[in-house]
Length: 312
Image (cartoon, rainbow, N blue to C red; front, side, top):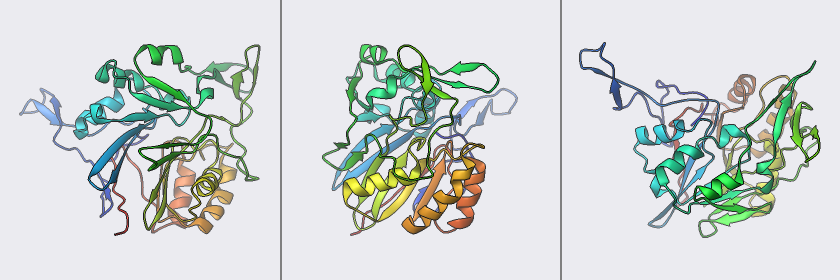
């Protein structure tokens, strides 16, 4: 699930696209009584991560999109059985990454599905705008999730999943001078009052070390800052080579556009082979990344599959 769906994008040896496909819905204005449809897009993010070691495959759901049923509907159209998912990882608590958990629960029932989440993901948050007014975000409920049968695992520290094949970064150290987080209007409730919440401290990423190629790093929004996240991934794994960066980079809008240039400059030194930004990256950052990384940048779209193969 991503912010856009483009049925006309072409793929290559490692990136597969889903066009209009063979999924039909009823539409009486056509002679056949039906029409072909593509996939849903919304301001949210969700990715299915499948890791293969030998003959064994393990799948994790990383985030769940914005609305209750869009992610599940896309899975159905893609022919993905969500009951085969072994666990859920939430990148952070913002509602556009967790809304689809309702649809997942309706599909799974009381499955005891493990869910790795930072303990600050339950934080009440809002966005205050200049000259008064504030819109509070929907707040994720631990009580509701556990009541629905999810096995909630709270971790601030890094976690190793799938027999050590998948690293969840936990809290990301903020070490760069230019990745300063959210603007002052992003606020959190501390129990007595609203206060500035620039860090979104629950932001975490998923990392896989692809043998012979380096790290594959998947972000939800990248609130911690892409370069901070990559530094954390390299430090935790002691692997310096970064093969792929996929997901939201949160470089959209006036508050974040000044961060584009230093991010691109630092990313040039890291030199990933694949850069597939999506969700909250923003069109200015996308244009810049496409121009600066012509051989690595790939446009994202709902239903895109990246098949990244380890060296022999």
